[in-house]
Length: 130
Image (cartoon, rainbow, N blue to C red; front, side, top):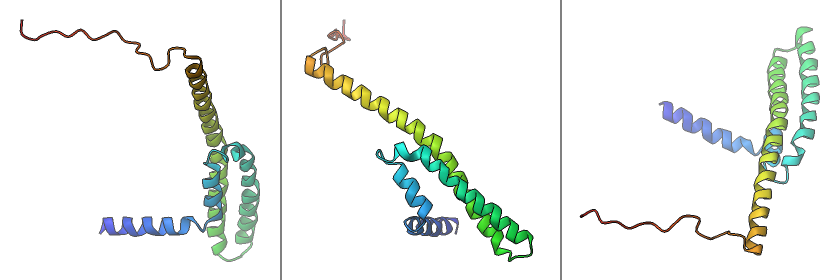
């Protein structure tokens, strides 16, 4: 029963993933080209926070209880963008470091500076039978 519920939940999640605008944007931010836009994307948390405050005010003034659900959605989206900024910055620095290492290795290969050469001594073959 638990496996069935988990399977149905996973299928619904992946079916709706392509329809949710924040998830589409966050998926684009996780690409190599999108990593540089992670910190500016944090600014999208501001409109979501303002919308949450607005819906909270409407709910408190006697509005529909559904505004509370909208508040949760807006706060969740704001938190996603607030977390995405530093995470993409860290991933960008990591990717830039890997690319710099690859460029250095390629430059050494062109110059022939020990890339591909054995750095270990030849193994000594010994017999187990003395």
